[in-house]
Length: 203
Image 1: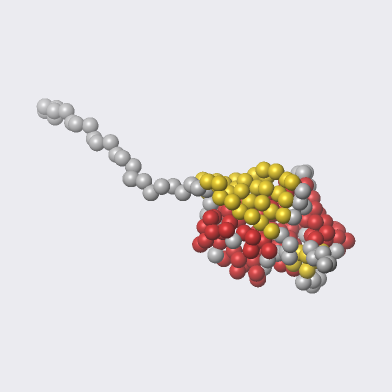
Image 2: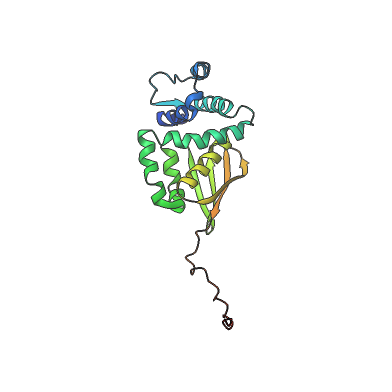
């Protein structure tokens, strides 16, 4: 049985190009063409995973030139979600993210991720009231998804969102995702009773 070629779909590259924004000058466009895509022309329906990896590395070096590859890719991941939200499919996905809230948004993560590729899988396990472990595979540059998940949690209304890479094993990356619990609807702040007045001074 032939092995399925790993493909990254057009909308993912649209998001990447939008993430570059005004940093997509002619030298950057030339390097992207060398990697296999033409950001100034009509994009193909899908590209091999290798083209995506090279394009992502280039975007990381452009947006965060002094950072490591993973940290630079995290910057790309954050900006990607904003850019992806401007695409036809991305806007439809992100429109309801805040209405879903962080829990339901994460539950749909596998389906949402698969809209951009034909291969990415995610397994989610809740480990606390506002904490999950998310395993993704295959992952080539883990920092990209760190930024992507953090931005997604923030867009869903999660306060103090945190995404930490726990470990990488083979082609799998395991992330710890957490955020601050909702503020409880507490009682109104107590006000101190005014101190009793002393006798009025005589005039």
